[in-house]
Length: 384
Image (cartoon, rainbow, N blue to C red):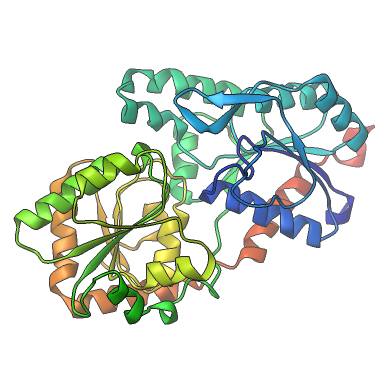
């Protein structure tokens, strides 16, 4: 069997409704699979106004708006029409990418038919409750995830640090790395634009600290704001550039009255915005990889990041940036001050990060998923 024999049913909770690192990775995988002439059908909740056009054939799953977060959809399982569509497509591998009700139903459907299941783990969902005052639920969420992932034949996740976490949590025994790539035509130091900075009221010598991502509390917005406040108290001159949008934007704007909020940026505009900063700050502990961190590295920025899954696999502490143990804001402020005061160190660590980012090529990365699909196929003897 080779890639052209594969028929993959890919289940997502958010394939293109909003824009984030996980669904960008899934759409890139879909593009690679179709380019390799694999069979692919995608099953996901849909929206009348999606963030971007989907890659591949998309079948809508029944869903309702997520309580309190209406931009997301909560899948409701597999309808009769969806099951009929699955039967017609006749997949030989199921890929689930979100641990929701529909994914669980898809796993049951696959198990009944003897079809192998691969789960990709993109986000540390068990950490989310702490950002909404419900940290006591983390253990319950972890048990739910374990009950799902142990039914899968294998897991893939973006970083070695996340592999270690999943093994420690007992999620599965077959866990491998599906890393992330970076588009070097978009993310490059060459995108830096002094005129654009000046149009935002940023002086040529001012140090700009960038945040990039969806503006939701689980991205560590509270820690970011507190670290920046402490930096100001220390008398370290800086500006803050916030790239992205989301439901917590109002809160973030109030927490950082001097911040420059440029909203959602895409394509070349995103590359320009990120490369026009001087330091990248990512306090989030929820990502399994941290696409935004890799993109900042490709733009030649030194990175200050939380010592959590994802970032620790990307950032070489003391070489391409600084890793800080979360969640205290003061150590983040100290790390930011170090770069703000030392142009030579900024350039050195930024150049090292840009060099490391060249290791991440999308086609080679996505081929690792194809290899896993093929490895999970039953042998002829087993099939008999």
